[in-house]
View 1 (cartoon, rainbow, N blue to C red):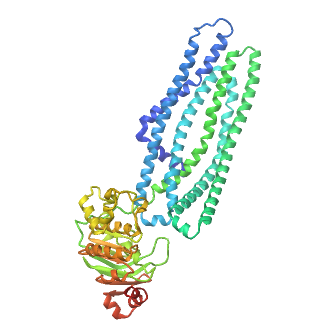
View 2 (view 1 turned 90 degrees about the vertical axis):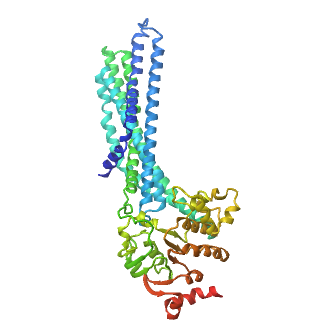
Length: 578
């Protein structure tokens, strides 16, 4: 069974906090010990205080009552504070482990795990686990101790009446067992729907412009409402299942109390109990109901937490990218060899690349062209090791990239993609991203080379200006130049430009192209572009069709062949000359 393993693993993570847990445990013991004190005082008052002249000082009564509740308050506060400290630390540790694994998983992970599902696990399901640990540790231990102490007190007061009360325990266990399996199934389905709802929210906020321009308001509203209604349905089904536990428990308790009263009356008629003893017994027995109810109700968060643990530990245990491989000595020369390279995306039978044989010399610029779906982006994404080749290999300076550590490999590569990703931070932080000790002069030089210096000069905070979510405060061209400035700052020997000028207008492109020309000097550059101006500057052009390399040569050589490239040129590029 997975559940005990998950629970054991969770409690194993509490090891570093055992001192605080011991303090919390001591607080629980003290709380449990204070429970029978009040009914004991009541017995003393009824038997020796109201029947005649009290045999004790009257001031002892308020002191005893106040003292009981002060002691109980201190122990309860200590338990609550310590358990909150431990649970919040556990929450942080779990989220840190999950986030660290998200950073380390390969790109293929997101083909089977939606962003909404990952966010749901990190924010919602991990909270359910912590709630479970807190409830299980606090409720089960404290309330179980309270039950034990009260039962011991009841046995001492009147063992015959206590035996009637003990009938409650196996009946409650039966009720809990009956509801547990249903709650676990409903919780698993609830969390799946909750992840779908999170995904809808994530997509809606990200695609706000598309929704507005294409009139998708009603479609998105319907999607959201359908999942929200489904989520509510599961919430009500779980609530009805768990809510039924409480009245059933209370009915059983009421039956026990009724029987106890009848037996106590019989014993009173036979002088086997006193009024004080009976009131003390009933008081302690009624006090027993609250911890028994709490123990019964812990089943809900327990089942929800165990179900959430499957998703959370599933993410933590997801296979990371490989960490093995040697470290490249210093800066690479930049030679790349593609040898009998083939690739298919995980879970797909279609072949994305096959039989690619190509050598790119250090400092050479090679452009990849072809119709959409020909394999251009797939090919360049294999160079940084985003995916491992299905067949064949890629070599950097003669070393197979499968034998080089990914960290070392990626230090040699800078990339500018058509899908620009920026962070909600300052301009300087985005340009120097990944550098633990950024050089401000290099940041300024990179910004100037990317023709961002005028933009920065016009901003009141300059390089320290916050750019918003994914650079929302910048124009499309400025965002593209930010990505180019980041690549310039990295100063890597291998450069990948995947539609790097796609978001620029003609004027911005001319400004950036000059910076790219400088950036590309002395670097091995892999270019994917549709604009003639970028492709003509390449030393060679590789034409891909259906995942195969069909032509290779300079711009003029390929035009003279009058083959695939010439057809593409006349179809797509010739209009740029006009």
